Length: 131
Image 1 (tube, helix red, strand yellow):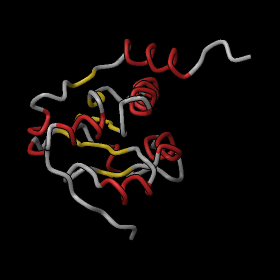
Image 2 (cartoon, one colour):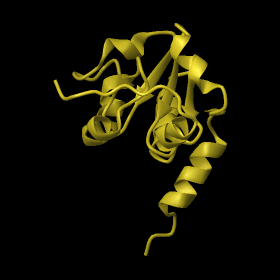
Image 3 (cartoon, helix red, strand yellow):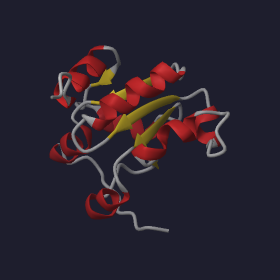
Image 4 (cartoon, rainbow, N blue to C red):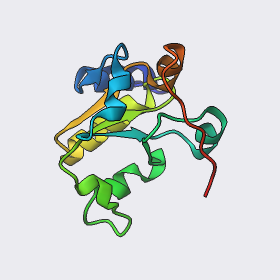
């Protein structure tokens, strides 16, 4: 029997990370010191679009792309910028943000409510197709 379910894990992670309020968050797209990171599955990205200018990182590759010792490391994570993670509803992004914070990334946060909240406020969305 599971004694620490996903709801508990998300609540614990959320209590230990920074969450950026969704109200007024559309200005993040224009801030050159912030990198918005979409951790949703590629099928979600194609179906629902994403925040303009965001970087897509599949959740299953996040730790490997962040770790500079990994053969899969991506240079975007060598930056000194602030990384703001989002998913559909801020559950996966809470866990992802906590994970990279535990790995040593200092300037990290998640977006309150994820892409679902972003879309409810009618903030811009861009469509993306698989390369």
